[in-house]
Structure formats: C-alpha cells, structure tokens
Length: 268
Image 1 (cartoon, helix red, strand yellow):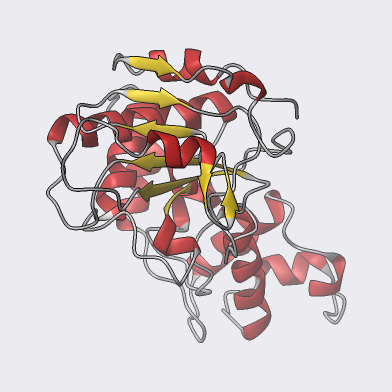
Image 2 (cartoon, one colour):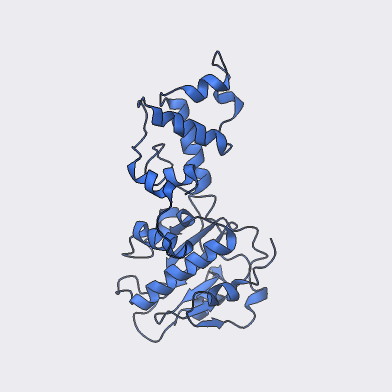
C-alpha cells in the first residue's frame, strides 16, 4: 500500500474543518503497509493553550521517539489535522496484529487525560472513524481505544468504546434503520463451551462460510465435514475456532459468541 494521500479528502467528508500539515503526503516512517484497524488516542497535552497545542509533538516526535506519531490530530474545536500519510509510531507494542503501527491508522485527539470532552470534538472523532471505516472497508469493530490494544496505555480517557463504536456503526450505514440480520442478532443467545443447541450449528456454518474451519477441525469425524457441521455441541475445538475468528476480526478473543461476535459472523 502506498502513502495514504487520500486522507485529507476522507477527513473533509466528515463536514468538520480540516487543516493539512505542510508535507503530510510524504511524511511517515516509510509507506503504510496496510490499514486493518483504527486506534483512538488522547494527546495527554496541556489542559489549556489553544485548539491543538500538541501538533508539533505529534508531527515531529519527542525525545526517544521520532515523529510522526499519528496520522491525524483532532483539536478541541473538532478541527481535523492531517499530519502524515505513511506509517506512524502510535501503538507499540500492540496486543492486536490489526492495530499495530504497520496495520492501523492513529488519531491523536487533544485532551489532557482528565478534562471533559467537548461534544463537537467527540462528534468529529466519531465521524472521522466512520469515514475511515468506509474508505478502507472496515467494520466499526475495528475501531479500538489505545488502551484496548496496548495494556500499558489509558487513552482515550472516559470514552465508552462500546457506545463509541455503536455510534460509528450508525454513521457508516448513514443512519439507516436496523437490517433484518441486526434484528435477528438481538435475539440470539450467548454460545459458550458446553452449550448444546441448534444455534451452535449456526455458528459452525458461519465459521465454515467465512473460511475459518480448516480440514483438521473435522478430520477425526466419521462423516467428515457434514458430521462436523451438523453437531449441536459447543466443544473446546469449536471454541478455539471462534477465538481464531475473533482475533482475525479484531474482536476480544474470549471464545464466546455473543453481541460482539454474532454481527461479524453474520456479516451484519
């Protein structure tokens, strides 16, 4: 993947003001290899002193860590700063292979780490994440807080990421009403180790349809794949396949099929 020179156009689709940092189209630690996720940060900058006082640090770096540190900056007024088109040092070490420096876009929102978030800034934050998801074909589940993909980090403070992702998902669909699959998901049960039901068969069929059932999974059955697909038992083997699917989708890999996993299985 080349330098992401479309990022300013993506930012403008949010309707919020955009400032292009001089030289951003060639700024980065080499090209961005891929975009599989989005990581949300706060700058931990000064509590006052302007709309985006952290620009120089995010753009140029700090002692021991060269810039750019993120692709985007987000001011308190909702102004989006386009800082870099190449790879940025914004999340390492990452607990998710979809959200490391080589596979994700970083957004550094101005906040001291304890001050309230202006609603206009949160609106721009959600809108930018939604437009990036549309641009790169990502589900809202790929939008993660820094703290969710790096256990040493606390940011962005006080934002409920489940609510944040739900709002991003609505923006991605243009505010359309729930689809028939979304309605179904509301009534689907949790599937976990030891369960025995026809819903387990649905999980098996979806995993197979998504390409997450290797031949080794059913090699020990008498009737092969057909027998494996018909099983209503959630055994340890199925749980491990669910975990593999969750990791691939950027979902917490708890091995439980619930509200966070059903939509990706059913491609809501």
